[in-house]
Length: 331
Image (cartoon, rainbow, N blue to C red; front, side, top):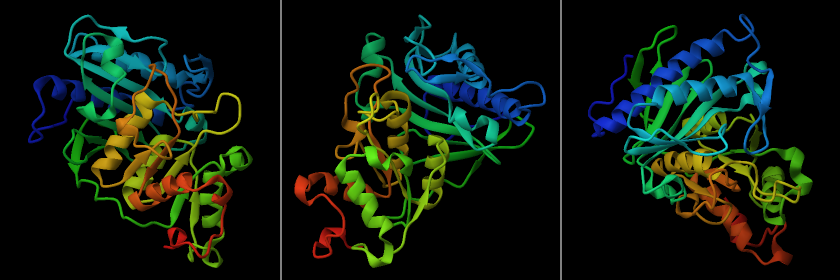
């Protein structure tokens, strides 16, 4: 495996774990590129602990990461595809992972990825993962698309590597730039509009109103339904992503998992000067109450994330769109 984390001040244990992750990432990139040639990676393969349908690639990725990390520095392995934490019995680290994010997009050739979060191990598995995201020592993702890339933070900025096609060679490229404070793009699944809480509807209504509305400018909506792909776009050019809780059964806390999806993405975004909240409060300060806990998630350019929180602070009878006289809704 050709990858170097020199100059980043990583411990030998963390550097070895990252090398193992990128090794699996290179293998998965080749498997994904051959989807349909040797089998259907999008075929159903059961249901995971959160009640979501699994695809064949979900299971392949989970097994590959688990096998690669065994007998290394990771003591506790927590995966979206496993009911409980797997104890490797030795090691100093705890790793939480969504082995294959966006699996509904496998068969339509849209970017998918792996999301991971690394903590120092604590006394036991619960203590290792049910803790504030500020205690992560690494968090990031591997994106499989036209380009396979690793984007990660070790707590001091965000770094990026690109996989040279057809090889296991990862090349360090320019670090992502700080997120712009303002943006004209937002991402949300608009089909759920009728289920959203009023503050989210108000925020979206004011952007949909465009130049004629209280914001006085036009906005573009994006929705890929792959958290890694949404994050990569926002890191590349700014924007805001919203996955709120809503009034449907099972969606009261949204559908994204706090520990192995939202916390590592929040680390990346805040390291780039952006914001990441549950709509009101910072994700990195929150304490998940169980491994597969869900949370509403809003992240991206700091002014947009703060604005969503401001809508939540409005009195209920004022939290609707088009308050042209309120400075809050300008810019």
